[in-house]
Image (cartoon, rainbow, N blue to C red; front, side, top):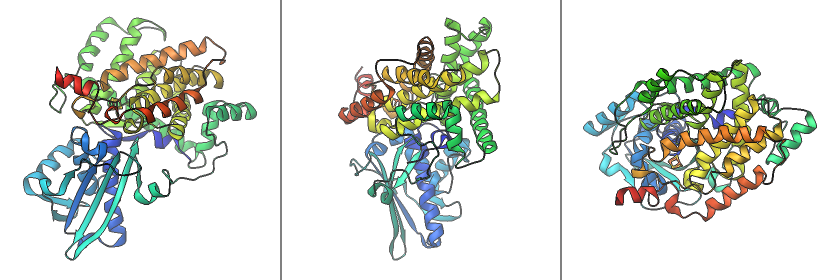
Length: 458
Ligand code: SF4
């Protein structure tokens, strides 16, 4: 399986990569298939069946709405997030779905949007889409949203190929040990090795431009998050805090050096809160590597870019590439999906990726980078996914701020050493996988355990 940095970082919409971005992609892929097979004009009815975690927490995550937008032909990286609510409201009022934005068909929400208390094989985030014509069923397909906005269809899942990209990379690695060996043998930094791999898909100029576009989107997301106040949607009445905190910090003034001051950590908190509040509000996002954990990497990158003395765009590129190397290891050897392994796979992976990115731009050796990622991930092991009300708000928003600070601390500790350490990153990733396998389903994005239950009981 070949994974690109652009698979791990994608422009999309909130609040969830697996429950919003993935389902929208699934809907759009289904319609694309109907169009390509010449079936589109014959469709008279569409049925959406949501299973497992998509059903359990799908309404809170906007899975139903996102799937419909996909069926309207919208893609997560291009849709205007502000248009989702009015278009859904219109559909519900008229019972008319504009399939692929061109074919009006009847869609009765209560009849055609089914939230089923069942699981399908292969993955807990599953959905089946059925298209019917005058004479009966035209086509159906099942999709699995496997985390981070990745979607595979039933055929890919059945063949065991959960990622279709079998591209051969010049420096392919399946473990941190292999990554370190390749860096040493070829005298490469982690970002240099990653750039060589990425050039299989795109030119260096395209890679740099694409990564800077992601950085731009992250900055816009933070700025939007600092603009809005009030409560977040969904009914929990969670107040947005970033705008107020921003005003307080501006009064204090920014710390003048990158360092371990308390006030610098407050800015890190601020960047993460801004992103995750914007995500919870369904705004424009960069999935990094999921939406629930999307605040950690931008918070650490903002911290570095704003408070370092000498920075330029090449640092942004190197940060993303260093972070992606660790994201690839987490995805290949465990999971970045909360529905599969709990929050350790989302926030834990993002924390380790942020640590790797920061270590890379601070000049860490590959061994120190691996150490930083290992420390960051190790101290997220066992973290469950228990969002209150199925919304990506509590504990998700604060959890990102805490993890961003943890990533910075992990880098500080790793840079004080020479890369030698007791537990390897590979061992920690394996532990995350095994812990996730042992974790009860109620702690894996079903909102049936943990805080999700305690908060309701109180
Ligand atoms: S608890 Fe963690 S994994 Fe679960 S929705 Fe929140 S951020 Fe995602």
